[in-house]
Length: 121
Image (tube, rainbow, N blue to C red; front, side, top):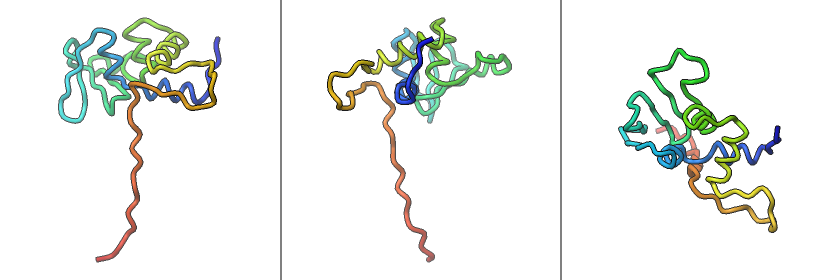
């Protein structure tokens, strides 16, 4: 099996799951702070990166996870195919001609939380 670097797995797991679902033909709908699919209302997509399916919550391996698990369950891919698919979807190339970081599309933006100093009133 092809070994992936930590960076490649991080890129694959940072792909926007709502964009992945819509590219597979599903229709994501925003409801409050999560997304659901028009075709499966028991599906929830949280933070655009993790999913959970409540209709199958007692079945092991079929009820939620990351983008890789989503492709494994809903597109019938194995883990290797799913990671390659996500890297292609993000616009990542494994062989780099330049030492620059690649420009990736469909990534969930990373929000840095600023800590405020604790001040008593």
